[in-house]
Amino acid sequence: MLRRPAPLALWAPLALLALAASPARPANVKDIAEIVGVRENQLMGVGLVVGLNGSGDSSPFLAQALSNALKRLGMNIGADQARAKNAALVYVTATLPPFAQPGSKIDITVSSVGDARSLLGGTLLQTPLTGPDGKVYAVGQGPLMVGGFNFGGDAAGAQRNHPTVGRVPGGAMVERLVPMAMLGERDDLTIHLRERSFLTAERLALKISEVLPLSARAIDGATVKVLVPQDVIRSGKLVGLIAKIGELEIEPDVTARVVINERTGTIVAGERVRIARVAISHGNLTITVAESPEVSQPEPFSQGQTAEVPRTDVTVGEEKSVMRVIDPTVTVSDLAQALNALGVSPRDLVSIFQALKAAGALQAELVVL
Image (cartoon, rainbow, N blue to C red; front, side, top):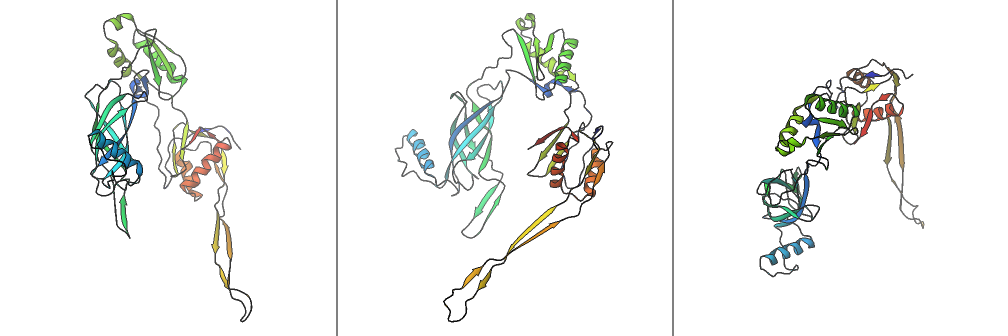
């Protein structure tokens, strides 16, 4: 039943979000790779948001944090007295980009820790942001931007989006520079591919050696090392060399891959996905359970008691299905039409692709999110 595979080109099933990959085109090295040693760093801190309209925390750790903050300002107030409905304890996170200089500003994300209903209208107090080494690299502060709300009373309420998470654009000021080591011990530059591929790594090494007077070699499917001449280092032209490498164009290898999100029923198939000739039959099994309890009354003047007797009705239904043969020359668009002819839903397609992979008919990597 399974014969030679065929390429899948387009993907357009009904009621299904899908993306189709076009034929591989040349890409700039800077868009598919990065320099080892040049990286972002994650920062985190714990702070207080004030100015909330009665939607703050009622948790005990907020009272302790508020008491500590007031003590730093010279006000000696115990945790049992530091209670405010207009404040919330929050986690503050940020990403420190490479080469960020002291005085530059970065965005921060503020997330509620306790039971605050909303951070709308709040202001983040000065919060130190530390790295994994415990050192302070930035300090955040400012009014929050919240893309939602939560209003309500005793009997009803309304909520839109996620009001317990907000952002402060440019809300953190960088206080410490993180040094970046672009060159290795042997004065070599290491380039790391974001998508691992031996073919792409070899193409990159050949391109660098061909266009630039440099010695480049592929170490593995994700790493290319470039030996930097001493005159380039001494003359301070390393940045210009990296810029030239980043502007080089190569044709990256595209992995045949199908990505499935079972929670949303989303399927994304690349243009190099192949299937073999296969027969598909898919049917839905529906089980309905209904509870209809009855009341049992005893005879008059008897010693019996009124009791509830459970009654359960179970109905099992299975839709009729037909076997359809998918030809090996099928495109993704034709495959979608064939599957839609079976009357399958997007979530059924998720199961079908998993079955195709198990049967060996799907010649591609299957990624389930």
